[in-house]
Image 1 (cartoon, rainbow, N blue to C red):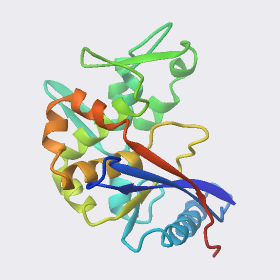
Image 2 (spheres, rainbow, N blue to C red; image 1 turned 180 degrees about the vertical axis):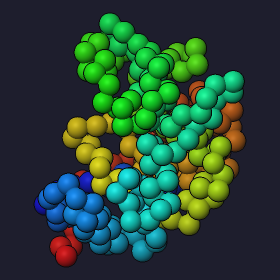
Image 3 (cartoon, rainbow, N blue to C red; image 1 turned 30 degrees about the horizontal axis):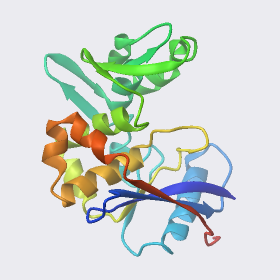
Image 4 (tube, rainbow, N blue to C red; image 1 turned 135 degrees about the vertical axis):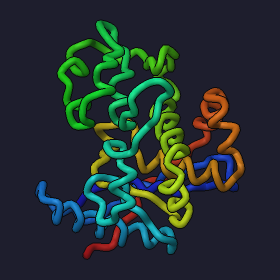
Length: 226
């Protein structure tokens, strides 16, 4: 058994994203077929919460859209700079006690950026610096969410398809080990778009900051085994 979050866009409520921890049957193994069995189990558990369409957003997603929306694949365009993935932007912008930002990571593969040894040998994370602008580490998902929703706004064909889904998952994200999740960012984008707040958030990072305190997480929900 395992627990993973389901992220539900809540455009008409103060908490724009509702996070529900679901218990489901885990299928061990690194093969993609095993990951997709776990995704199926997770979505069966999620179907007890919502009857809407669900999308797995990760490199292991059975849907091409879900793979394209992975932070490893979703491209962020920068004026007068080469484009890079959301993952490279996030990792390369980290500032630590003893180093960073490591902007050379903007120009490597997403996998190499995440695995760069400097990210684990430079002391505690103290902030982010993206294109010369400093970002705090709190709210905890603030910078990552901003990168992701901006990248979505630049990839409108992908973003338009998100509106058809009621919830999002990421089988690779373990909330016990990590903080930022692409499925959460996708749900936030949908909520902002449907509530008419997206334009103002894209125009002002402080507007996004003011909204991220309104989140809600429920206790784990017993899933249905398959």
